[in-house]
Amino acid sequence: MLSDAIKLYFREAFLAIGLVFLLLGSMWLATGMFPPMVVVESGSMKHTDDGSLGAIDPGDLVLVMNPERVDIITYVEALEESNPNYGYEMHGMYGDVIIYQKNGGSDTPVIHRAILKAVLNSTSNGQKTWDVPGTNLVNVSSINLVLDYPCSYHGGSYNLEIIDWIPNHSGYLTTGDNPDTNGCKIDQIVATGQDARNGLKDENNQPVTAVKDDWIIGVASSEIPWVGSIKLFFSGTSSFVSTQTWSNLMTIIAVVVIVPMVFDLLSNQNKNDEEE
Image (cartoon, rainbow, N blue to C red; front, side, top):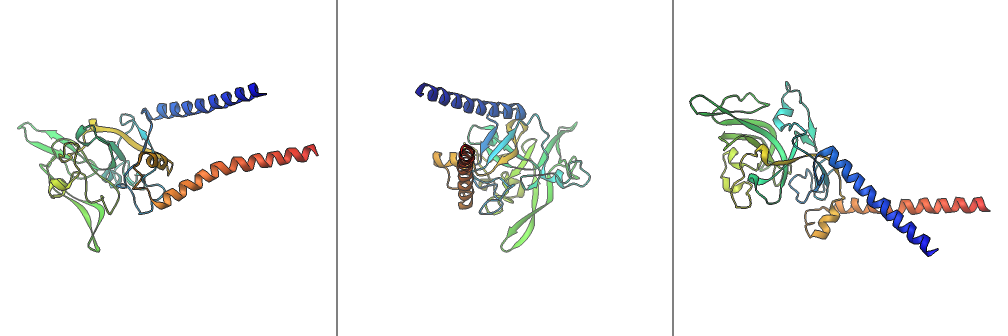
């Protein structure tokens, strides 16, 4: 009997491990990335204090697509009525969310929304000009643009404005969705005419510049809410996880534990009834 129990245990363990590898392998093939998912640690993409389904909140697991497999759609492209991607939304707002290395460095990647892309042109006299897909800016010497992107300020509101921005190179302008901590405080804050010392910094304390294609390590796809909070709890980085997220996670765990128990109880009851 003991030998049969041991065999059963190893069989179940083997099946469980095999299922995990099958799942990871399938996601790897689908996304072209490994690992195929990341856990969100900060609150820079939150839409509300308690978090919300559809947005990227601390503790969410996000499926990451290989950037070579998808076309990145920016916020301004998704707002342009003549653009084939007009109306495109991902994670609760227009445009794609990208995962990138700050200035191509090796510190913790950033997961933020691609607002627009500055594309460098080369002219015959060596002067640099820029295009911004999704807008009417073509061959401009600097980028000036008022976006349909609402910002709050002292009880009022205004639209995000890009002022006399001359990028260092082609790349994306990015920001988190959180209206309190990010939003109009874009990563490349010098583009709004503000002091670059107040923007996002890299590991060498240098201002983050326009995000090059080579710095993008993934594009955020589907998400599994709340489950990643377990990892953050054990790694000691759970300070951004909301009380609502913990509550939702406990509910999921309870359901996962209780449902099989109820099923077994009902199965045993039916078996006993049949024997009687």
